[in-house]
Length: 465
Image (cartoon, rainbow, N blue to C red):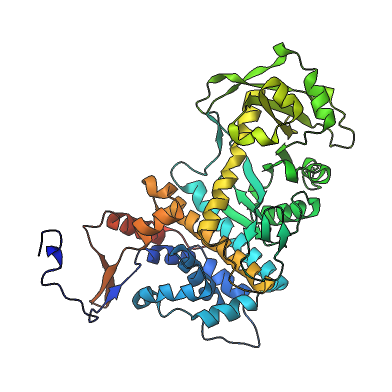
């Protein structure tokens, strides 16, 4: 035997271990769901007078959400929670999860949304009390204190088999969900599954998803809101609804959205004097010599658009990936132009531009959602897949609450895969002594102390009032 292979000398394997707990890092996450009231709220939302299941439906959903965080990509994946059965009890089976999701219709979705909103009130109270307080967004070093930032975006989910609602679209064949994230906390407030042919600029969808997302927030978080979306979602009806504060004059809502580059836009842009351009800022807040900003509101025909709307243009050198999409004026000037619409009356153009560009955070949210199985609809039935999307939103929120309230350092900002491999997948051994149980982690594993600290932080949280 060589030194390269001698590690296997005298090694044998057996299945005789006892008191072992795999995936022990998920235990604090599961406990967090209980401490903030999510498990009880979901159980109450799904209770049926004529049916008493063996497994409480709220517990089934929370266990399934934990399984998703551990890498489950189908209903059968809930079996991964069996590795924690010595601590958390035997989990529901895949068939029980199927029955749970299949029983979730429009009425149950509304009740689940209400349960999530009630839980979020308590979670946000704890965020206010943590060191550093609530995570307000910063733009160019300026903190947007008191402003809740909401990002809307649609994403195409491919379907590799015949599924209800899967239809041809501009990227192939599948579904076209619309998602809303809270950029402050990175919570997934709404994950609405839509048919593949659903439009990107459907005002009714954007308004209804926004209403649903806003209802997820505590009342105090709804008063000052910034809604962001790309140009496809920036319809006149949607912007008018935002301008009205959803019909409530007490609300101070603003929008920062992409704007249509129509013929009127290009005619106005051609009239802009060269001296009117202001340098845009780079990611460090320093002026860029090759990128500029200008406001062209007074040069456009904005009849039919909400009062107070401003249009700002950003130009920058043409990136090779956009060369096929260039308009004649862009080819002529060697610049690519982007338009931003906003109803913010103050602030410099540089700030408004940076604020609009930070909408790209939503792409990271969608990437994380796809990493957690958004791109794998588990059923043929649209109703079940919508329930799965809601389960994914639960998993996303649970992970973010855990990172915000119980984890520190780099792991507090880690992507799902990193969080799973570094923290959640850690094994342990459970011992019983003096009528107490202790979950023992290997001190040689770097994240063992992080898991213990997370457990202590979760245990210290107050129960919902």
